[in-house]
Length: 298
Ligand SMILES: Cc1cc2nc3c(=O)[nH]c(=O)nc-3n(C[C@H](O)[C@H](O)[C@H](O)COP(=O)(O)OP(=O)(O)OC[C@H]3O[C@@H](n4cnc5c(N)ncnc54)[C@H](O)[C@@H]3O)c2cc1C
Image (tube, rainbow, N blue to C red; front, side, top):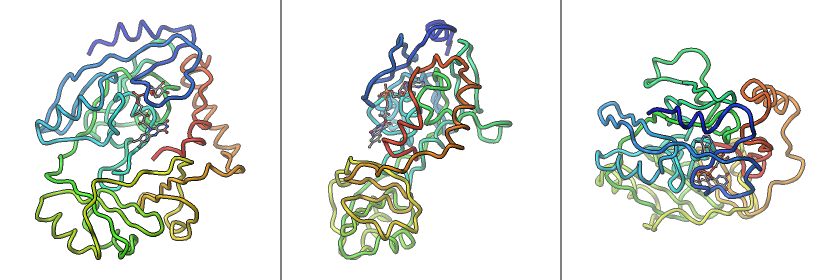
């Protein structure tokens, strides 16, 4: 994909922001707005990779991949670039993996308006710093993604959700074969099982009191926090915990006093300074503040 026009639109001097489908909401930086190119360039089912413009919608990508029995671990709804920039995995992260593992290669436009390539088509081809992992979750403050190569995964034959109040979710994590999702609100456990129909049926049969449900519960939206797996058992209040992942969706906002350490803020500022010395990319957007209010990336 030719990124010349995209690089020219980003330019090299004035403040600029990039937008995908705009699903994240919240205030946009006060700057000229550009959009990444869209379109699927190359899908190689045998290699389990797909190359596309970062402006491609995740839904379009998913429907193309589905024709070849494949999928990928990006949350649906927005664009590929937006999903990668937010780095927010959905509740299927336990089985399908985190968003950051999806990005194999990125060609992005840096603060000087130059096109930069990061990563490689296969993991073993990559040497040096893992820039792709740095770009995921950077909210477009280090560079604007133009074209990406993503890792695809097999699409499960069936995907079914079950709920039970009779089972210990922590025991299920050890006894079930790679559940796609395991959620717990202190009383009810929800589990998503994926794979071949007979295997899913057999696994479901091993879950005490399991009844089939339409999908995951509605997640509380007060705050989203990552916690140590060992502290999950002692959670209180209104919550839904992602067992095996450590992300907890709380009904209550993040308590005050959970600020990012000075060291992390300093390191973060140094990285931003190296990539974007004049602060022209998504000006005013502080990733640490965004992560602080939306519960981090995972
Ligand atoms: C269940 C669920 C809940 C979620 N809730 C939230 C939430 O509360 N808050 C949240 O922040 N995210 C949330 N997300 C993350 C979600 O992934 C994003 O909202 C969505 O994927 C963004 O896509 P978009 O195209 O709409 O991006 P936009 O909303 O258009 O942009 C989002 C961010 O990405 C940057 N961006 C867009 N395109 C590019 C590009 N090409 N290169 C570099 N940067 C780019 C933008 O500048 C902006 O900072 C949630 C995801 C899931 C699965």
